[in-house]
Image 1 (spheres, rainbow, N blue to C red):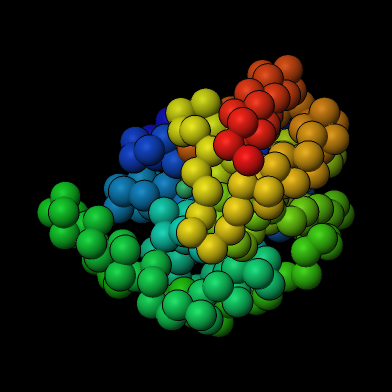
Image 2 (image 1 turned 60 degrees about the horizontal axis):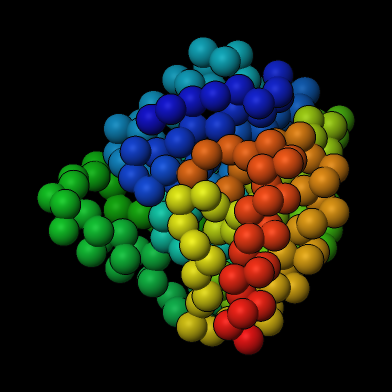
Length: 230
Ligand SMILES: [Zn+2]
């Protein structure tokens, strides 16, 4: 797992699997984990990573969307509450146990052993667009859909970091969810454009963290390829 600091308040840990990004944000005495790495060793490392970086104890977990590879934070922090967009909570209630089934299938395929099964606990539905307090600051939550029918991007404006979930990746082309549409994906990219322009770092769900210029290039590339498909 690779760990980089984007700002004194923001760390990004990148999993060896699919370069899945996990972002850790703090303000004052509060810290949130957004999405998760995938491998057991990577998840086990997170609490000591927070301590080494002198980050406060975790106040909560956030997930950009309900795909299982982003939802594993509770394996590292079993007592932390998970907050998701209301659209994500709806998706999970429509297909209960989906994340657990897909995690089990992945683990069986690669003979991965985990000490505990994934328990997501009581999930808090967050209003998106909306805000989420953290210490003296606020995270801003923005709607995303197209990759899946659910989701949110999370921005930390004081650190100029934007965590977008599975959009704007240089390692994966746009993937349109079965229950979503190209049109929804295009609208999401248009919604992200001004946020990307204001950010200094854009963290995609998978692949390298992008600077503003590169993220706008990827956005334009994805828009062009999707527009051809409509
Ligand atoms: Zn993903």
